[in-house]
Image 1 (cartoon, rainbow, N blue to C red):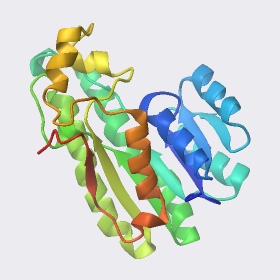
Image 2: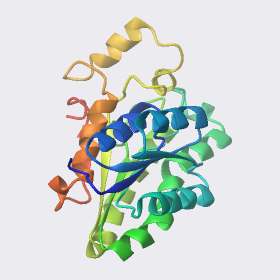
Image 3: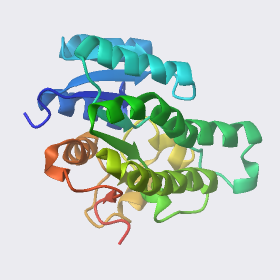
Image 4: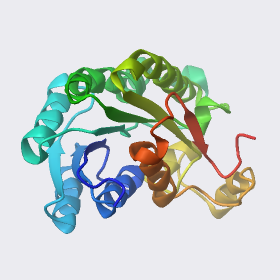
Length: 249
């Protein structure tokens, strides 16, 4: 029960890594707001978990959406202790010049601008409380970029820099800011990263680049996020932790 009495918002919490984090946090005693645009999946997970979880329709590129999630957290559970900026936009693996401007903008809106908007929604609440933990989902692509994902790599590189800068500025407020850098997981985004339909050969070729010999899982990410959310990491801020089975070595 490492998160007993705490309330978290998890963006993109209706599937993939986000769902794993939601379920792990509630197992550890937290109340969680799932902030997502997939109403069907989000409502189903909240219903499955029960009173410790609520769903909020939230477009992370909208200040109104993130403000609504913050209001739901404080209004339903009385506090807002943890903000997990997990919602992400993948890039289809393709040459950098083949990516159109609208797609480029959407990648940066979802992956980068959303953290700016979330900060505006939650930092004032955390400052008033005198503490908080913000966890951003970056990527191993920020640390070991590869061709075909140039603009996605860049967006996640921005996340790591934002994390460190926020950590320094918010440290006097006792608000910690850290990031997770996962390697690819077997989630709905995997097809985009692989450039389309995934064959067994493509899977095997990618897994061969991961020393521990497998993709990441939602549970891997959830356990790492739990560490940053709990008092186990009370003196840790500004860290961008690789959750990658050794890929970035």
